[in-house]
Image 1 (tube, rainbow, N blue to C red):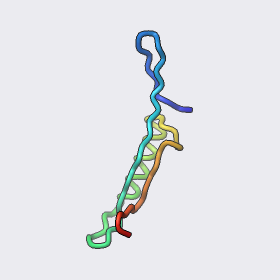
Image 2 (image 1 turned 60 degrees about the vertical axis):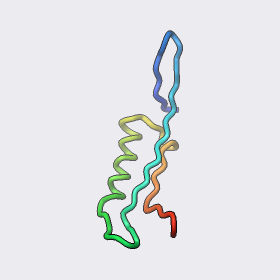
Image 3 (image 1 turned 135 degrees about the vertical axis):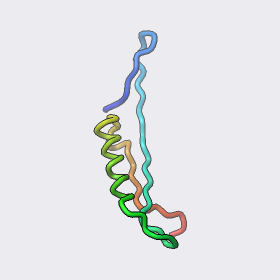
Length: 68
């Protein structure tokens, strides 16, 4: 598993991170927000490739609504 690790006082500490990305592009009562979904996908890739967070620990939720 791809994790972030630090060594403190001779002990190896493993930090496992998870990311939840919620992006809303299409709203019911207001104008569409273009490119929001694309931005979320790019940020998810950044988390995976640059920050080393495992893909299984990244959740991308597109057009989430509480009342639909």
